[in-house]
Picture 1 (cartoon, rainbow, N blue to C red):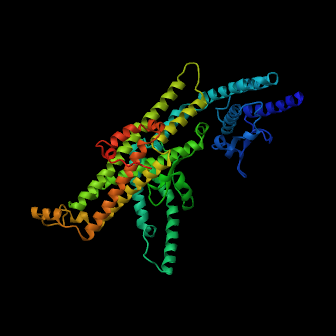
Picture 2: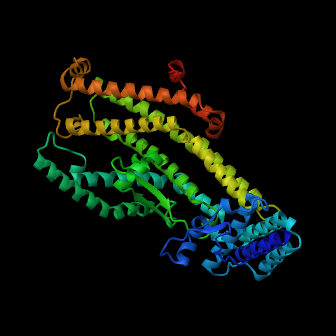
Picture 3: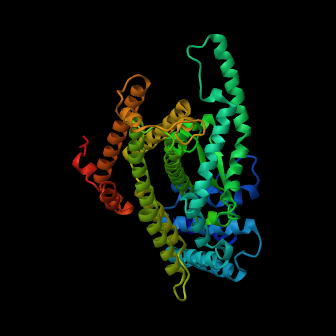
Length: 512
């Protein structure tokens, strides 16, 4: 029995040496490292940018747990993936032969001392991680450069780029609606023939919009010109989600519909060597989720701010004052939330991550532990997600409803300005020849509300009540949030800023 176990261990050691020293995948079905290379995909294509995170996996059911722990098996997977990926990419970053020889000798020593498996594997893993940081993740491929880029792009550190992009998206959307109005308008009780015509026009319009997706993606590059992001956009692109994917995306990325309203879009980064050694696809999905939320919040903020251009020509009666009041309440909430996220959530956690990176890499006579830095980055993302209140379904739902309500209000006011021709009827308009007297101004302010004006006032009342209810619910959810979420997001500061005049605390709704 002992001889059989010894022979099986020798086979295992050969597989481990082939994988860990040379990066050669072992096709033995009994080996616990598995490959998921797609049919028809070349070995080079599967091992280049996606091979590190996607091709090789640990088959837990095949790990000889009586001989090694899952942690040891994961270390074996890590070392082999690093060597295999670097070998595939070529260049001067290959592991030195002397280091390979040391790793091989360590593995061969297990023949006489099998009990040293854990110690040997950890030595090799540590040596491989040090080699990665000293030869691969350095210079222009340094971790700090990538993480700073992700902070500026996905978390909107490039404020001027975000503002330009939001404005460009609004123009792009208006042109799309103007060119294909069937996308947003319908005929009341259409006949069967009209329905068929509308469907044909709709299909044609959507097909044309698909061709314009490339133009939409070009907006990102165009709006970066003249900003800090110029010439730093390599690997980034924006993508409009196709209709057949929208339902699945809506649950994963609920805020992806705020920027373009009628379409969902995301910012993505092409994972490439060598950052795919450090980041997983799950990390990138988290960055995408954060971007959709932050760019949606930024878009709503821009919409409310730009209403001033219409309202400055608007009426000064009760209707006009009500619009100004609702806008002020919405803009206060959005501005406070946006500034809090950037100043009290993203910035401190990012600075803490950079401090950890700097301290770890500056230690004398040692190189940083690869997995420790991965853990620090994962913790950083978790803090950001919790700080943005994206970790619970209730807060996600109420924030989305608040932002959508703000969008609807902005569109309502813009449409009202067009219908009532505020710009043309304003006293500063060249078409107006007379100046209002004091009596006319008093009559305008005190005239009875009836007809169309009353209908507008009732709609504004409903919007104001809905906004008050939703923000009160938000305040209650944040107040009752678990302590770890409050700590990640410095939520006590947010609550104080929102409740500066005791508005919410005095009228707080107790949720069931």
